[in-house]
Length: 243
Image (cartoon, rainbow, N blue to C red; front, side, top):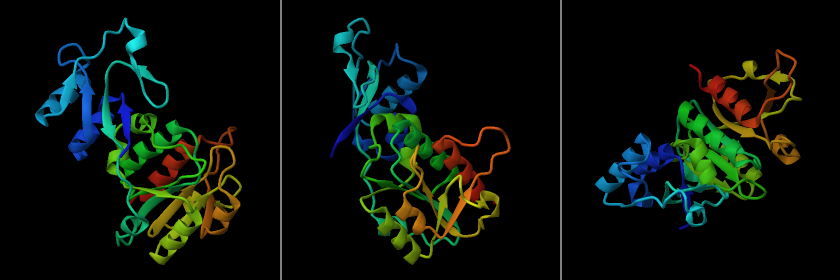
């Protein structure tokens, strides 16, 4: 299993809480690091995980870079969170709930922000497309600040197939598009929704749209007519999970 380098202490604490066996080593000082990293180091020691003193900051050549090129002296090495299957993801038989599918999102910061918001609103799972999508790197984990650990993940090569499986699991598929006629406010919240979020620039692919049961938009009330994809996803999650 591959590993990732995490530089946000909150993302490391989340891994320690949910799957401490997957934390390989921590580089943090129990005396000189920030309070959050001190907490990480102390927690890791309780689990008998290797805790090492960070390399001196003045030795830049020896500082460690993560998979996105970020450089830092305080970090943790953890195994990637295992994905689940579609059947496992849709096994929840709740009469109401929200799942997400990300259709080729390419910015890891957007993906991480979606995971953080999903964790906040209790989203039941996220489907990620493997082709032309941002991989789940340390940047995603750190931006999510623990959100990755609380939301099941499915990696899917064929998103349309995932939508078909969702429908067979008594779910409705909701797409988002700024060109849709239906407003988000008109969507029935008392359903099992798989919400599909499109690419940052191109939105939903044609086949994805054709397999949605409904398409809605977030109507603007000001002069700016579009939203960052992670912000739009957050508004949809907030609206659909509201009681």
